[in-house]
Image (cartoon, rainbow, N blue to C red):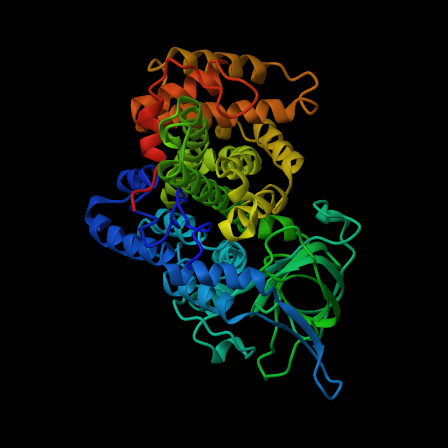
Length: 544
């Protein structure tokens, strides 16, 4: 007699076989808004194709396998020769190869390139976040290399290639190349001016020998790295290839891989240099200024990556609630669950809208947008990345005990969620960067106020928040001690202004009432009951 006790009922089906891009209203509308009309058809086609791949069962399996089989370090071969290689699972290479072939390392040289690439990065990294690290650093290395036209001419075509080659070979022999970055050291962390790695000039102009260590060096199998080291003229930036032009391995000793909370598929390493060959990038003593373009671009990717993770968490929660019955009906129709889902979606949509606006500013050639980025990128990086973890935790809870089980994928999202707030400068670093911009670059504040001012008069709560922000900006006493409060308000006002201008009225109304008007509790699901929450939830729910 067949057993009947294990009949499966009332379980949500997997969220699979759908277009991740097409199901995201906030993202598709942002692309329509920021991409030139003449390019829209082609951009839509590439993003829908990427979205369908991301939502496929095969790619979701790649993401799971890449995390279940983390990278392995091999310092020596069987004969005792030092090789310093990291072995990745085949799924990692498939994910990385698809990212490269989809143009996710190519933003700087094509029309609307940053919006197209940011939208693609937001879609594709929902499948798996770890491989986004080398994708991001490769993309972001371009502005730093452009400080040296000869280096840019040599390396930029490799970094923007759509062909992925995983072998360690001289870069000139590869169809494309990936880049990493080595900045932080044990004793300094974000205080890179405390770095002790030395760079001594050789007999060849522009070439140096580097000796020292790096505490965090992600994606150590990349083809090249931008590294900070102390040269005779001060802290300087260097290009360090993994393999030299003659085919010999550069001295790049991987001491160990980090055992991290999340981001398990990606290799984060500690490396030692000992007479390692490097080429000066920019001028001696101006290393921070040289590499700051790379840092700014990777900070924006932290915002985009957090928006991606939040979107996937909210999509999973809404999908589950739409298919799970409890207490006499679907969860998604229950007033309290609807409040939670709507509240979560507000964070997700605000993050996506802000991320794509900043990407559009990168595509712009106006002084206004360049000045806006100086303030808005660190403010967005501070706030959006900090909202990621509570969103992931609350979305997991929407699935109940099912969400706490690894097979749901939610624990991986939760473990990944704090990452972007740490990388490229933690919260205090971002807040202090905002203060520096306010103090040194008046044009940045003017650009910010001009941007938020475009929504002035459309919502009284936004108007009140702008007025309060101006009062805070006028009071510089004890500014460092309250920098986090100030930057939080700046980010929220910027998000609110963008939503008032571009989002559906129910989304903008709910955001302004809760985040700017003070009608909100201390946990998700505490939105005022007078709002049109059903419309917000429908916007969050992916249609499969």
